[in-house]
Length: 586
Image (cartoon, rainbow, N blue to C red; front, side):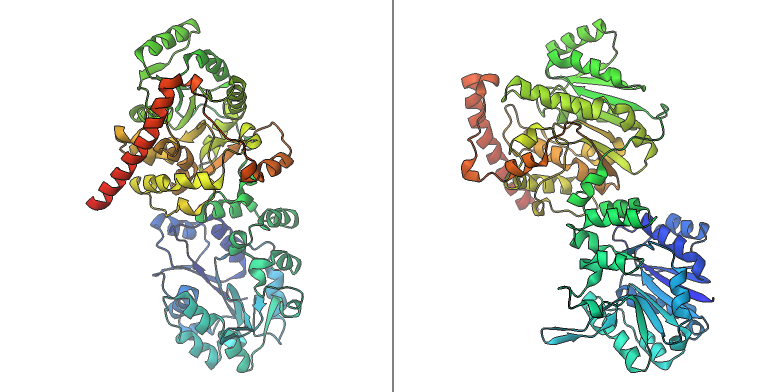
């Protein structure tokens, strides 16, 4: 059959997602000519890739005006409105859906052999009264195929030639999407849809089945699932992903990678899918690897060195600490264990974060970096800190070979974090109200790093992070953090209060990697706790919560308590004055 496909693409970050390549690969065999129309500014390399893979015949780059209808108009104009009539069918579609979930050829054969159908698509939308405005029954426009019987008509030609590039999406919907079906039907043409939703409306509350009822689409044989479904019906998304896996051969990883990239990388339905998997390929020492251990508690160094014996790859070890005395102790321990490392005194500011950033010149020469510190929790009984540390060992140090292999064999993977330690599931330390108090500092960091992607942390409840900042990462994934200029006055002295820039850095890493187009993985905590624990802990009424306190016996006694009282408010005042000064200067 002599078929034409006019395919409209839009990506707000100006690249082509893997699901788009797959979509065109599967559809290519059905069409004599494929015209790819992009409303995003694509690089020459991505356009060349489309041609090299023989996925398209023509490419049109246009401004993002008029959305898909104006883009389809431009495609017909490019072909020639008269020449469009020569094709047996003209299919217009956009990239707002995943699929096809199965072969499309039987659908084309079905409708092309039916003389009672002039145009067809995937789903229709019933007519509804919306206030003073009536929305006509219409064939939804993410996929429409027009047969020659209608493309040669005057009404078809007049409609498409008259399409304007409206800048408001609602005008496109009001003038084109909800009008074209009635226009053609009133002219005597007939349409059909793979899933006729009209008889189903009495059983369902919502009229837009493509967003609210993806299971109905699957049952009805619709080969596409709208991308919006995963964001707008997140409670269904985990089950939808499983159903797609069970019923089809569609590569679900294309859904996961696109949703992680184009939306936020941390919605609940994606988190289970971020669990680090065993790599089928081994690591062959092809990359430069650095391991950084901030060694504040020197008595824990031997424990870490023993854990590092789990690394079966070449790496350079960097140890930072806060004093020359500790450096000497560290060098004695290294010599005793016949270990080699560069030991750097970075002072006692910034916990483990700032010492790592001070190694910028050294770490920038490495591909993969592991960041750890001699973790203790002096405000709690020692065995709490030990349990936390041991779980971090089991998640990020003991499986390091697997982690490094994943980093090497997955170009998109930029960061590996630990799962939540059990201590944070038995206690209600992390709550949305308190986490939101970090958001302003995170937004400030984001602006200072001059990142191209927009995000507002104030709109988020909690943040996906590696508790204790044990992480593995590719330097490129976190590069802006190393390049930011931090003044000494921004770094709190010990004992640090809450809501400092250090806490903001701890929480921003996953999102920073996302801004650099890197994905993240979560290394699983193998200690099982029944979800009933989470349910109990997270639903404790505030008036039943025990009072929390800091045990100053472990951090300076009376002197430490007085310092804490002074430093906390003092840091807050400095922050307020600094922000006021910045606003005045701007």
